[in-house]
Image 1 (cartoon, helix red, strand yellow):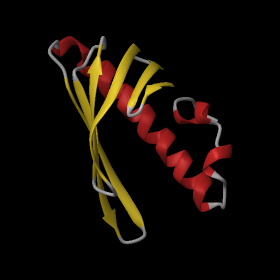
Image 2 (cartoon, rainbow, N blue to C red):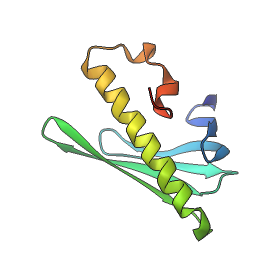
Image 3 (cartoon, rainbow, N blue to C red):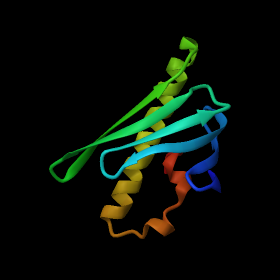
Length: 107
């Protein structure tokens, strides 16, 4: 992921390359992204604190139903990566030192 400008990123992902623009952020509640040149149009994360844990729901809007399975699988990969990031932080890791490749690949 490469920052193009504030809140806008060029992304190389498991579902292709696209541009992502953050269009809504409510800290500790949700993030919404507009997607350009991708197989989906919009995506987001909804965060729900549950005691000392946070439940994360990832959602996406897309036009072609044939892309649903690949988007679900990609979402699962991202959520597993976010879990690895959270575990890294819980172990006292510095967020700046986290290998961001671990967001999308198994350790």
